[in-house]
Image (cartoon, rainbow, N blue to C red; front, side, top):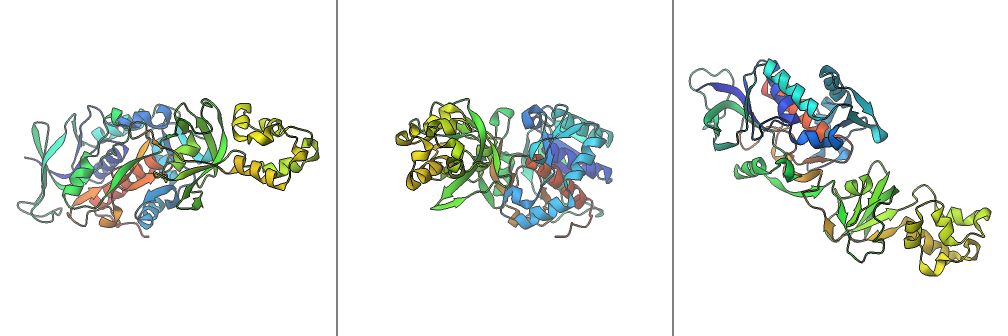
Length: 414
């Protein structure tokens, strides 16, 4: 039976780049995936076009247990490295709001072209094969050892695959309709790794049926979203102002998807519906004095939302008639609207899942401290990006780091 230098399980962007680069560094590589073609989930990213990276990218854009490790990986693989990859693959791209880099071709092209390059580098594909029946090496594997070598071994379909090194490049359980699962994360846990439980993030929030803003589905506007946790207000979104969309079940849109990354049951969502127009300043403008309060608000937001936000006893009063307390009450209704979601739309609607194998149990080369020769990259790690291209960037950056570690290159400095 042929002994590979490395076997990689998971043919998403992380596993594909890791496989290609490891092969280019002279290693023999087996790439295994349960799907019949690589990058199945990638075809859904960014509305099908792929939000591949972001001009502004730091560890502050990720949920993780080890921000220092994430910082190290990102410094070694900045935005320009992803752009260079897109150019190499002849994939045109454009920059949109908030520094987001989108492809101008279907996102699946990234996986397809990486797969072609893997094939050119003589990577052996085992597609449509679920890896199972793992056996770990009795001792630490090493390259170049004479005689019989300790190896990882597992079944891939009807064949048995053995390799000196093993890379788990699995995904998260978000969007199970695409065949996503946490099977490799559970495997890592069975081998003694600390795992953060998965939870849906980048997901719409569901509101109680009787919440004050029900019936506004279809309305969209820019807001600043925050959370109230344990009596403290937090505004965790580095971008600040993003769009919100009212749905028939609650709220969605980029502002809400980002807030969902930190939301937990019992937290309140705090919304500023006029983040760049202070209501108190609008009330103080002389030209607004004769306007009804409701009409003033409807100049700057959809009328149905203005009606829902404005306190009933103030709606039909003139702005000039409001005293200090009423003015502040109106400002709070607009700038500090608070509501308590009843839940989320769950993993089936989530763009990502926070959780996974904790980095605290890995080296900064993403090698296991429990099982020498075992590496991790991609979504199954406890590193989840906010909205804006951060998750695909992390998949590529971690895949590149692991490929260099497999070839014995020096780990990036902190």
